[in-house]
Image (tube, rainbow, N blue to C red; front, side, top):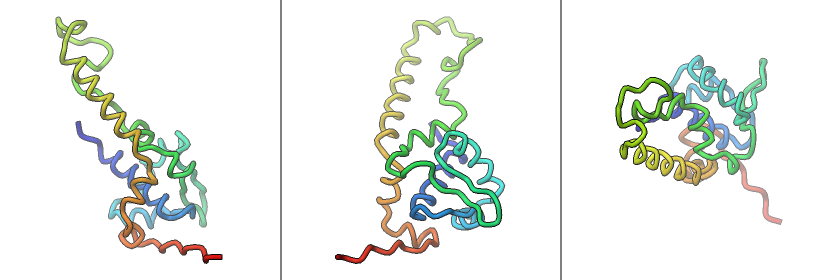
Length: 152
């Protein structure tokens, strides 16, 4: 199974917003960080916004930020929103399938188990996990490193 570019960049947008520490992230800055077109990012943002995974603010000082805390957004949340289909074989699709084994095929059940295992693993990781796994993420994305609160 291979995830689409849209899903890849959807996850990257979410990571950028999480690393930007709750501030509004501007599309031109995200596009520059990942060397991708702004138009492509706008297309990807639509389903993320519709699902409540991001909030957007239009206008001159607008931008995008996470719709809920990064530790409450799983990788599965993002993948489910950004992928159009999880059909691993023709028999996954509803409708006209030209196979005499459709109701008694071991391949279909094996692939469904594999897909469910894939979903289970994705649900174990949050956007926060992905950001924290890369201590240099702020530098790599050209973001300011958040300041640590002063010790009392």
